[in-house]
Image (cartoon, rainbow, N blue to C red; front, side):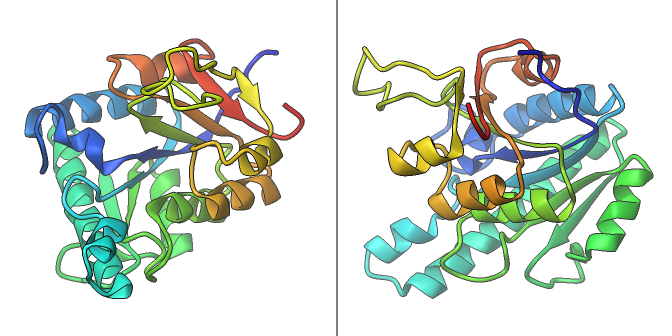
Length: 240
């Protein structure tokens, strides 16, 4: 089945991807490499939104597991996503790509608040919009934030760039016989608890008929290949 041409997508990157080969934090060289991939995608005429996680700096769930108040830990995680968004903005603008960061937690000195109609104008003017701070509330992951923004901005697809090249029937890191799906239904993902995104994010994409494309962002040039209908990936969609 040929992949439909996308006009507007939301690219969700895990915070861990920004670490490169480091143990934590932001690797400027790897962020610059990611920015080049994003620029190449944008240069095809695509309208692009980004959401970046914060796990390379702080993860709310992990903080809560160590005894922190969950809401407090989640707010710290939201601030980490703003730091990542600013790092990506800097890398993109060094390549001449006009970029705007919109944060769900208001901080006017460093970025805009999330305003949907303003974000629409930015996309129409050829700017990349990076949404930060998740949904602005604790107990929601950046996956949920990505699904929400993809629905809000009427994106044709949500692309999730991770460290694995798709969705498997079991963990490929612990099971060498794990089988990768080419396509899989939203309901199958939810029923089998396949680790694509959290359940609320998958349900939100299902209810708004937004396909989720899972691929490895660590493989150089893979974003362009996936967007052209090639490359190794899994598409989560209705009736797969």
